[in-house]
Image (tube, rainbow, N blue to C red; front, side):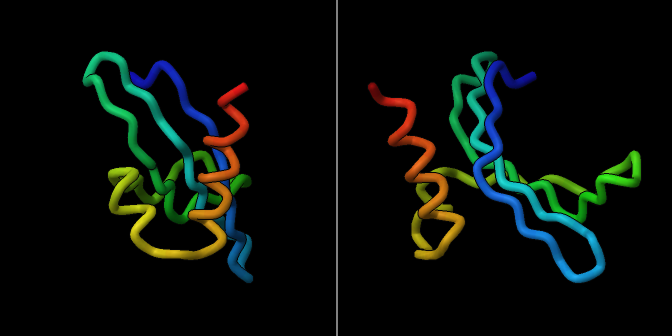
Length: 78
């Protein structure tokens, strides 16, 4: 069970389906990672699936999702 989770990016497809990206710290596993919640629809109770990504792998690609993560990380440091 994660002890910390913060959404940093959301992409809505034309059909109302959303992909959400969250930074997660799981103290029980001693890990910090990204979770991509695919195919979420706010009007439906279930999700199609989650994908865990390492922060390193996630940042290997440049894009607005990665920029949003770096902005979140920067906001955590006083």
